[in-house]
Length: 245
Image 1 (cartoon, one colour):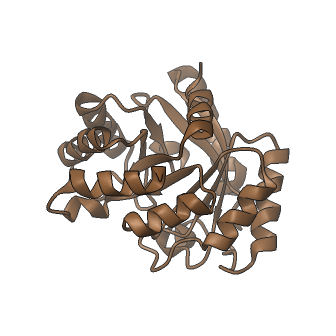
Image 2 (cartoon, rainbow, N blue to C red; image 1 turned 180 degrees about the vertical axis):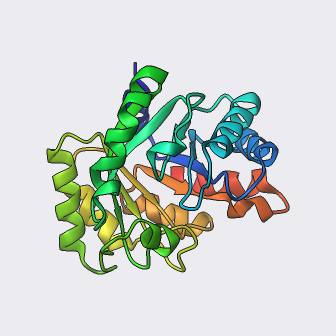
């Protein structure tokens, strides 16, 4: 069974939590510690990526540290072809559908496809859209942000992703967003599609994470800000319990 199939199967039984680690935000050793703690807390996978990376070496070192300390699958969440790593288990082969830059829609994929094929990492097709405020991801991705109350457009993108044959759809408010994607938008998007829905950005604690899952997200993503928590394992455990209901 592929990792994509495994995630889809598990998400049909319960809500999942993924931890997102940005190699630009902490040293590899710290990323390994966070991944180990995330596994102990009940997270289902570790995503690795960020909008401000400068080298593939950053990604390689972070992925290797995570693999050393954790048994969780590592899925790349790349901003470009040059940030792929052969040490990962899979890559979200994602198209930033509402970007004005064709590089993020398809051209980076053309550059990265041979690497994916010959490295043996699993490509997981995903439609990816950024909702306002978008934060750094929206700026770097040159995105025409979807208005936070423009549910019709969000649903249109989600359906287009499904009809194009993509395995997952991701709604992103941007790392550090003051507010996450609205529950109403999540609910309407989920009602419209048959593929798993991933939601991230601006989800800081159990209450917001639980609301996101209850609204319809199959997978809830939280980032590295929890590194500052005095008790990281408890903080993550509380978030994951809230997601699972």
